[in-house]
Image (cartoon, rainbow, N blue to C red; front, side, top):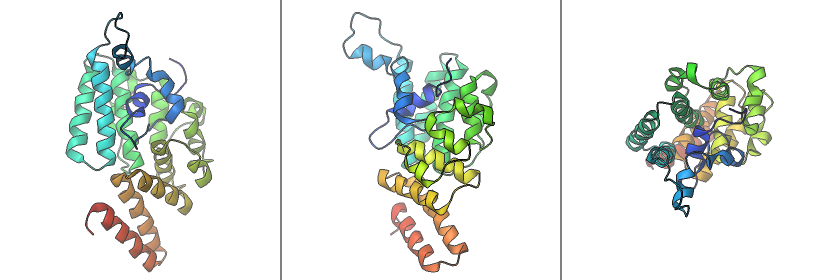
Length: 246
């Protein structure tokens, strides 16, 4: 395996419904999609003289696509069932690396939404995961070793190396990758008010309710701690609106 971004987690979330993106990394990562999950789409699009790709490829891609959309939208029941369905398709291959990458997709969208839980699904498969996947898992956990930073997708390397600021974050083209990087910065105590603003604006622009509520909540908490009562109230009103309580 090359030292590019890991494949399936990129590919599974790389072509979600409009507005969603790839937690791993946008256009550069998508190049390898043809050889994996979207091979089925290529076959069905006009390569009738070739064997049809296995059903698990398209089923896994579609399931993870729906999972990402549902998770970011805060649809708990849908996201859980879609992920388990996609995971089962991947597990049917008996390839732990594929399942590990799907687990990292789940962990990445959680970090984007500031759910800072251990990536237990990946940890159970870590021993059989390639080096790039292990590096990405360590990055999400905020503990990547400097020698492993080059294994990450380019847009995540600045955050991993402690060099990212709001401008660098804004320069990340893919909105979900931007939120993941912002989540890592917050996890490692390096999220400035400007980083919070970029993350909040990103989630708001995409209409992603779950991460929007999380990032607004952090902003409101910091405003309260700073004694900015009016600002905190404004942010809480935005949260109520996004949550459907206003």
